[in-house]
Length: 156
Image (cartoon, rainbow, N blue to C red):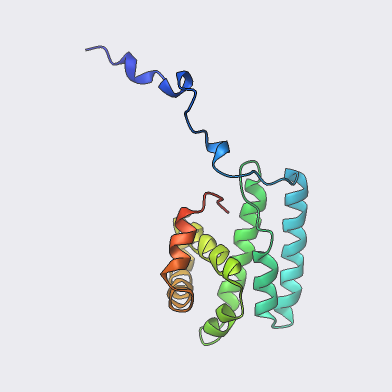
């Protein structure tokens, strides 16, 4: 039985085929600029955490999150920095920290939580922390936060 027909990309011949690049606007910043901004935010977050300013650190890392293709290094740095913040926050402080975030920041936090859970190796050591933050975020922001995160095509 000849199965070569299955290797043909029929979307090439369809003018109306939706391309992944059409689903959202790409990050207008240069990848090198995004990487530099992520490194600068990482340094800023460390200094804020040294001052016990968890809300400031979380707000800093969640604003202008890198998204889209060609910025994988910046995404990794941002995720590592976010996990540092989540691991250093006491469980009793989590609800107050989440309440102080804007709706957009809560949605971005949910994206990072899901990304952290999806990463093999990372989630093993951070699973309980990620699930705890997910639980508190869902209690405060509601299921709408999950729906917005799942339907947004911009991945962090």
